[in-house]
Amino acid sequence: MRKNIFIFFALCSIFSSSFSQAKKNTTFDPFLDTLEQRTFKYFWETVNHKTGLTPDRYPTLSFSSIAAIGFSLTAYGIGAERGYVPRDSAAQLVLTTLQTLWNLPQGDASKGNAGYHGFFYHFLTFDKGDRFGDGGVDLSSIDTGLLMSGILFTQSYFDRDTKTERDIRACADSLYRRVQWNWMQPRPPLIAMGWYPEKGFHHLDWAGFDEAPLLYFLALGSPTFPVRSEAWETYTGNFLWVQKYGYEYIDFDVMFWNQFTSCWFDLRGIQDSYIKAKGIDYFENYKRATYAHREYCIENPKKFIGYSELLWGLSACDGPADETLTINGNKYLFHTYSARGKSTKDFWTDDGTITPYSAGASLPFAPEICIPTLKAIRFQIPGMWTEYGFKDAFNLTYITKKTPHGWVDVDYLGIDQGPMLIMLENYRSGLVWETMKKNPYVINGLARAGFTGGWLKNKE
Image (cartoon, rainbow, N blue to C red; front, side, top):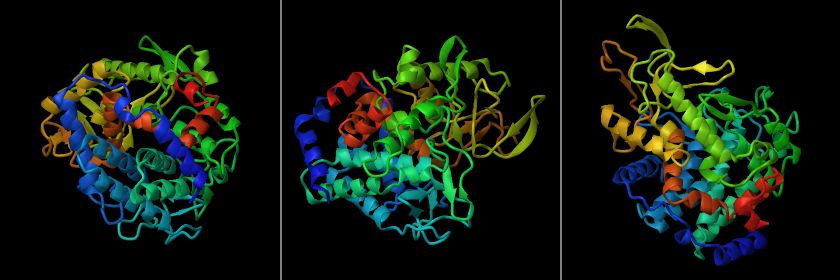
């Protein structure tokens, strides 16, 4: 479609170090190998191979999640690299997915469309791939960002001179270039959380530390509809630097805020003006946050059953029920799906529910505490370890007649399996990070956000 972008990727293929030459973690752990392969199988075996639409959860089927599609697109490259599936098969499924996304209708009508201005609705129906539900699902900026991260990974990973892989690169390029990031700015320079055909833009913007750094990097890197360069500085201007449990870091509410961007963006050794002033990089910040989160669970101020130095990990995940129960003389308010965590601000949602991906997706930051936790969940919590790795969550405090030993989820969630898989691979080999470093849009987005140093020196 665009000769110049093809020339760039060809040059990257020739002059960049191949993945096989990248420095890898040489420590072999059979548990991690099995966990990664099983987690990959979730994406390969539950996706609709005719459309590429990935379920939000499984085995309870409801709708497709565009964020889960972004994770699955990345998973297929990992599976090809690891030899879990043939590269040709992975490439064909990627192309099917991208072509489905490109051909789904876009428009401002409340029904019958998958997106608008290049963005996609948070949830899509399985049969038609259009907006799910009756008006409650938003045109999501962050979920489109997660989707586009996976799309750009496929653009850079599938770099061979075959028709399928050439078509992948072209379709990925078109999908990314179509997103009108600057349209999603009713209150510039920040980016709104979403838009609804029935009521317009969401009343909140992405401002302050959360999962949105990748959204700003992608919006800044766009060659067609970029946001202004001051967007990133305005976004970081709302960060809160705290000291807790002996660690200094950017305050956060839930663990996935520290993880989603790092799935695709290697922030080791590169700095913007905010983090440079703190004398560290964001990778170190995430490591400190992981340790502080673990310390909170060890402290266990609400006295939940099971919390310890091995059993920890709060984040957005499933939960047992929406009800209040008195257990062992303590009154607890439980939740189903919810964002769980504790910050130094007024956010505190902790009902005793632990999710494995909280530790799994933090593996590159602090393997010395994350690997023992994953193994403890594997061997100490019956029902959590199954054919697709870990079920989404468990709660040992939720003791009822039906759950006398605590609650274990029945489902896997795509947006939780994805970070687990990607960060496992980044810890073991750096594959996703090294692949994304080849992408010109990624480099441009980080540069426009003011990042310098480290591996970016070789890209200037």
